[in-house]
Length: 194
Image (cartoon, rainbow, N blue to C red; front, side, top):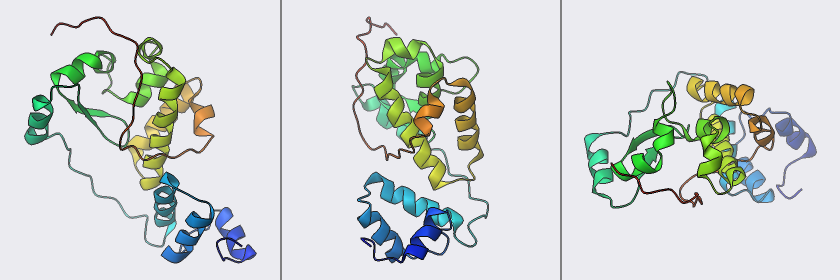
């Protein structure tokens, strides 16, 4: 009733038949449910089931360019660049020192989700490992909703589901988050020379 939609239409949407829903319908649903970060996720899901949405998506260019690295290197604080899969794409020297464990992960590219769920060193790094896991899962869910055909996201979620003891529990909560800023409390680290 709050969205101004019929019971039949809402039932259809709840069953996953969201394809063809207009922007005004999606706005009504998002308003009725008081969605915030989840609003973009709802639109992503609707786009993914819309007619003609199964086409191959173009690969995005890597943001790790010489100019990005130059900006990172000019910063006097630890700085990193990550993508929606939580892969660490670039870092300045302080960022590499701070996240040395991630850059040291065996035979895999550095990834924050793999680190918090699969690397035992993460529990000593974060003051509250549970609070570090929640946004990682929510960011991955948003990435999966943006592009359900992204094989790398799907493989990462599968890997974490099978190898990460509590990833599946966190994933089942269906939380979504757009990551634009935030704070993480880490355990004090000894001085690093580099």
